[in-house]
Image (cartoon, rainbow, N blue to C red; front, top):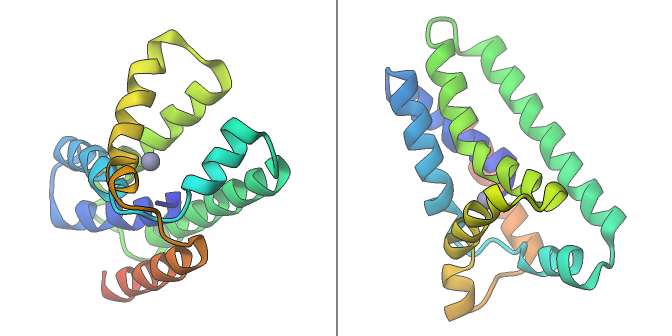
Length: 154
Ligand SMILES: [Zn+2]
């Protein structure tokens, strides 16, 4: 999923639980479970990592997603988190951390993160391998609607 979707799910967890440690752990676990839903990014990940094509386009996609996630976080903190800032921040941090660790692994190829990268993609590719991925535009539309509904609700 996009970082923006993981941010929205982290926000739901943050508003649902009153403890930042619980929020962080549940946010972290939620990342793997949500990533299991085929979400259309396997082709661009393959283009980026294996084929080394469309690299600038893919980096632009990731930067737009990161900036969108930051805007969502700032909006949340500005409008809805007067008394639960720590829980909200911890839950969102836990929910996006796995992708950040994967990004660090991609840049460094650190042997200390190899196991984590494999764990992440075990979950990420679990159903894609058995079935197939969906088209990215449909996934992005669905995620956009989901984020919109989350922000309308919380
Ligand atoms: Zn992920």
